[in-house]
Length: 374
Ligand code: V47
Ligand code: SF4
Image (cartoon, rainbow, N blue to C red; front, side):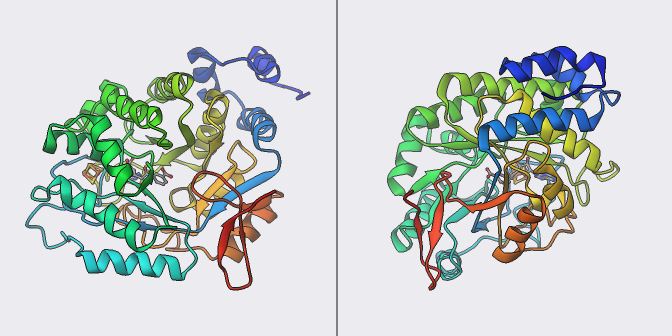
């Protein structure tokens, strides 16, 4: 039983303790700065421990961004380049395969693949990336292409979402990351990324993935021009889809990094905002199993603290991350396994290595891994 000091929180506390669902108004109250953060965090921690006990997950992963050239111009993006930009690049098959080799040599279980929507690359180029990596490294899970990219493939090929997803699955796609969700509400979406797939399309693509046994993640980009209502509305739209499909594995709130973007005049969100958003996500998304505190964006200290505010996952050791480092993230490029385990233990949690689908992973002395059978 949690002792709530803030009287307005009483009915929310009763709902959380009874396992009942929170409403839009509840979400707005939780975002009110007058609602003490530590009480919101305590409630979120209750849900987190009911769902995931004392465990905090991490994985050993790498990122691959095969190109940064992109037809879109999302105002928050520091990663993209124009076709003839000096900064623009496209990786060759050899470079892509070398990344696969490096990943496997370093014990990675997952490669997270996303990139720009290149003006001149056809759909087959994107399918081929999955195919060559999967053929060469069949044990490396390929978590690839956001809903925005799948929507671009629809435009390129005029095929249905289902046909595209099944072709990618056949080529070796393991699951899909949660990017491209940004903020669903059109009041914000139309200003920050007006040309890319809207909320209905993004959600339709994830629904179709779930219906075809492809697990996906989901995200929310916060701390720019959106308000409390837009954030809570976003969470409820994700929760509604999860009620129908159960296919989301984890939700990742993404803290906006303004440097080198079209919104460079904004400050990045405070740690208070980060922790409140993690906690509210845990409380609102009662049907999504995991909440990820993505250390690359939050910073190591806030991500570690987030393990007491609703989060049960730190993402991975990560190598070759570009999207946030281009936007001014000052976090390291990689965390070692001992360091990530130490951070989790220092937060009072039990570190568990997972694979992309949240199976526990065990390793032998030669660092060869397998899904643990317990
Ligand atoms: O959709 C782009 C965001 C997302 C910036 O599924 C920015 O496990 C902050 O979705 N500041 C892509 N954010 C990354 C993503 C992700 C990350 C980690 C794990 C998983 C997962 C997914 O990055 C984009 C956009 O929302 N983004 N620019 C920026 N300046
Ligand atoms: Fe392109 Fe993605 Fe950047 Fe938008 S966020 S400009 S779609 S690379």
